[in-house]
Image 1 (tube, rainbow, N blue to C red):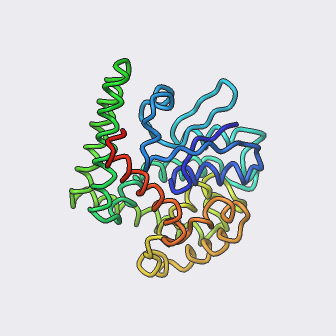
Image 2: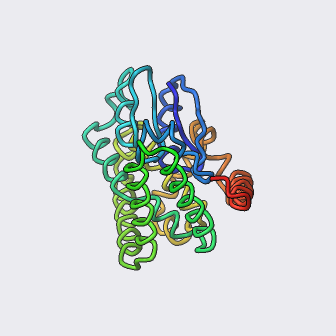
Image 3: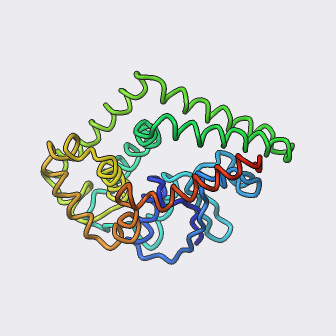
Length: 264
């Protein structure tokens, strides 16, 4: 299997944790959206949304984290076996997927940084559109989706709704952990694989006092998740803003040079 991903993407982290927990062999192919590599024609032809992750297994190509998680869970039997409630697993995975993690993350990024990358990506899309007329409509749709995200980040109503949706998820998890050790039963499942990166993102954004400390069962659950080998493999290396700078700073330098020499 090949996983096209970026280590800072929350949706990619979900999928990688599931792959690690199931002990499946897979190859990581890094696609850096900060450098707009997800907009390169070859990748864009296979996945016109340009979103990550993408999983390729022989002739099977799956885009977006929800169907990928469901596909992975079906290989050699689901995570948790008979110690989890599988309908509840699917409920959790879908609920998490319905919450827009990108809005949450980007709303905590400075406007200056957002403008720096969004202007670059816009120029990349326009350049790709001119060089690949067969993909012009798909690139135009991508421009529209980029604009829609920018508008969401300007809307106090959208940001408030996103935060309220997150609070509901956290409260439901706190309640569930009062009766079971994991989100869907008494073993780790893809429900946990999809949820744990949210807690890691909350920690990264230094929102633990506000969002996790008032929920003691959730805080204890997160402590247990952080010692799992899958967490250490997938998230721990990028668990602080300083560690993430090792990825972000070189990308910013690359983008600055490309902008300087108009290489889109």
